[in-house]
Length: 296
Image 1 (cartoon, rainbow, N blue to C red):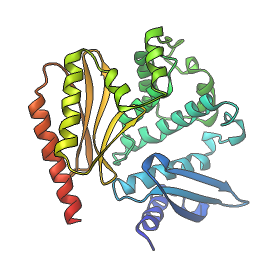
Image 2: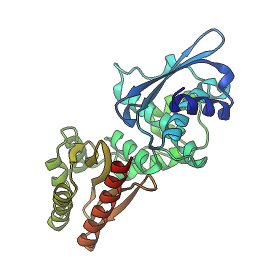
Image 3: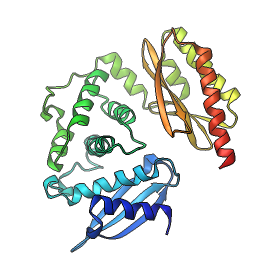
Image 4: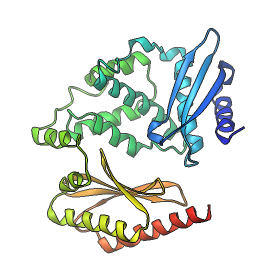
């Protein structure tokens, strides 16, 4: 029995749902972004297929969160009615919002239970803000925080919110983004390292971001740099250890992996930040991660 299968059995027992599931199939997927749960309702039980990234990082938490979707399906109060959800082909935007909100419900419970998880609050917030391209960042952030704090959902509620966020208690009609911001968000559809760098201003901050990028490329051997929709990612042996995320006119976000603790830490880089201290920390954390990989 594989480690994933052992964890899956442990999680289903912990959640009290093992008696409702007669068959669990676990398949590999390319990254944590592709992890998902497929649920088939049989006459007297569920058949569950999990797609799980083949990496030990947060493995227990990643499998635990996938089974929370199963818990929701089994919960009569959740009122699971899959045929009523937005159609992925006909309404892709509504479907994406629907998936984001259900995932927020799952990951906020993971945080309240204190279970380490790839999708922490910071990452989930960034994903939601990126999804809501028609809202200003502040409006999207406000909506996210209300969604995150909500302790329980029903399936029909999530569907309602996917069509109209103003039905969410505490939210009026969320402010639409001003046209310059919409232009900026639209530009993210065609991502590149250069485009992300161009989003950073003033010139002093852009130069600092270039210095960090060039430093990592030169001093961190075998680093793979790629543009993602939210920013610039740097990975060593397929493991992301550094990200530069454009944020505002006053700074940009820098996320670094603390490999011994298996956590990511984010700070805001401003014009007053000490670039040499940042570069020193990047090199120290890269060296620790590379050493761990070498001795693994």
